[in-house]
Image (tube, rainbow, N blue to C red; front, side, top):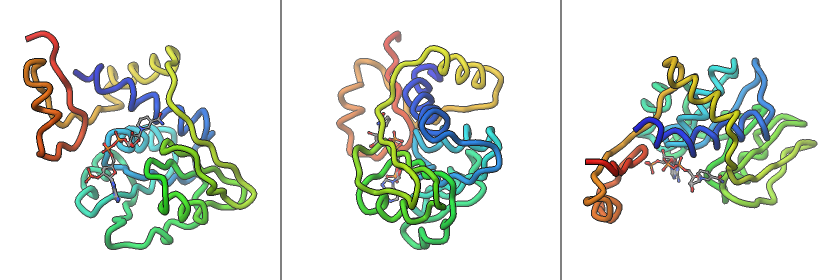
Length: 185
Ligand SMILES: NC(=O)c1ccc[n+]([C@@H]2O[C@H](COP(=O)([O-])OP(=O)(O)OC[C@H]3O[C@@H](n4cnc5c(N)ncnc54)[C@H](OP(=O)(O)O)[C@@H]3O)[C@@H](O)[C@H]2O)c1
């Protein structure tokens, strides 16, 4: 099951942080949606790389984000995003107004990386990259190795049989974490 949960989120986080964001040890990264599937992966990878990680999300995401390794958490429902001013990199999953506000939090020359689609938001003297994840066997190998060694964990919210797959996805219940469909009984 970990394999099914790992590929998209792991590669997206890896490419956003290291390939596009060029994150280095000692830098500070703001990870939006840190209690979500991609954000929890980005949080773990960034922390393991020696970065200081500030996660964001809803109030009830705080514990999850801290458990995944965020040093700090900004609850976007009750706290000020501006408290994160001065970061080197923003890893954005939201788009819209949060992305626009986030550009202003980045130190001069820093980076805004988003997976939420094109944006006009730009950090001062810095750059913005929006990207779509691509297959990369070498990166996947690195990620799988970390999982095998217990240095990375997936965020699985629910598992379902193939027979129940449609009902699972149509369910009104909010599932946090990845939903996995078991093809074999
Ligand atoms: N470009 C790419 O290659 C690529 C790759 C993968 C994913 N994506 C996109 O990236 C996005 C995130 O994917 P994901 O799988 O990580 O989703 P997810 O697991 O639902 O994570 C999103 C997180 O953000 C929180 N959140 C959502 N809206 C919020 C708001 N207005 N204020 C505060 N917190 C909020 C969610 O909280 P709740 O759970 O409480 O709502 C959740 O913790 C999706 O739009 C997905 O399509 C793009």
